[in-house]
Image (cartoon, rainbow, N blue to C red):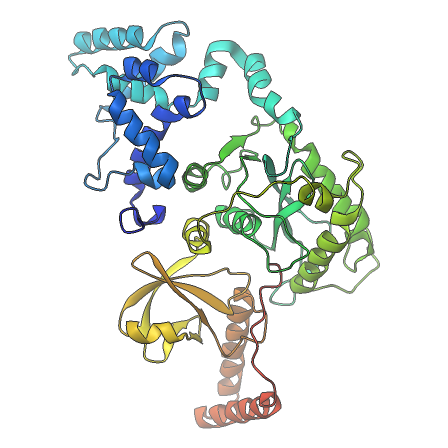
Length: 481
């Protein structure tokens, strides 16, 4: 089966968009809004073809709808001015059927000497328009708010029905990889039903699509810590309109994993009260007692980001998850565990990696392993691929190990023996390398020869090696996994 349907990321953006066009056509059937007969009458697509699409989507997800033999499948072959004209008519005339819109479009095209589009092409233009945009244009802002915000006011009925995600800058100053004080960002995914935390990510960088992907990857897969059992694919993933959440990649991930990606109204984040309450809990019960908290101006000491991450993980698992929530009157971990359900999981960790670990780099396999960021990664499976180009995917929060893919198939997890005993952030390595370069420049400027500098560095390495020889190598997991 895998040979017939490679992972979603193996296809071009055009192929994935074409598959999404097919999905939007069968979506009303999947949600019990329309019958196949109605869809056939509206689109002119044979019922047998629709049945094939539904079967392939249910079995393989979005990648099942990709037609590999044609890269232009699903494209709307219309001039931009004709597409714009169709969109204007759809948004202007609320009560007109698509048949009427098609007729008016053809009349406009005849007057302007343009080629008349088929009904199916008009339908695809209509499907490409956001339903919320149609609602806003047809019924006004109040009706739009009522329809698209109401769903977020209700409570989830069981775990993993609704997950919420959001970012916030934390009210604490910690030391970055250069040892300078900086304010970190926290990204959280919260289960609406239990209020348990499914995943989180601390970083100094502004929120981005890769951060959201990393947190979602952590949230969905099983944790290595047995006390943190929240996992599975949510039915609905509710976010705001940040560009990192509304990216095409996130939409494709949602369709392939079969969960609904839902956004709050722009400027009216009514559904975020629950996750903002968690942020308030973090401030009052966790950050206020730590050095560097913004309310403790007299405190001159600071934690590192790694130290803050370790304390936050401990707080979530052993404190927050076991505190009775003021609204649910239950402990979040017990509310999630005691509901008697089995979480819906992806087919494999490798398939989840391909979807969500976007930090991917091509690398050549050398006789001594894979070289990346000045480190060497080894695994016995690499021996048969010396000279081949592979794709490595990694979590920038800890690069003691990398996942290796060959021709879009998982090959192995390679480990760097130099750092396998430690949790290492990519930024720490880059900062350390820059520091070494700067020291070398200073020594060279002071008149030392290159040989003297090299000899000094060699002695330092030998001393460190003597101290660590008695230490047995043991791989540690990421500190926030």
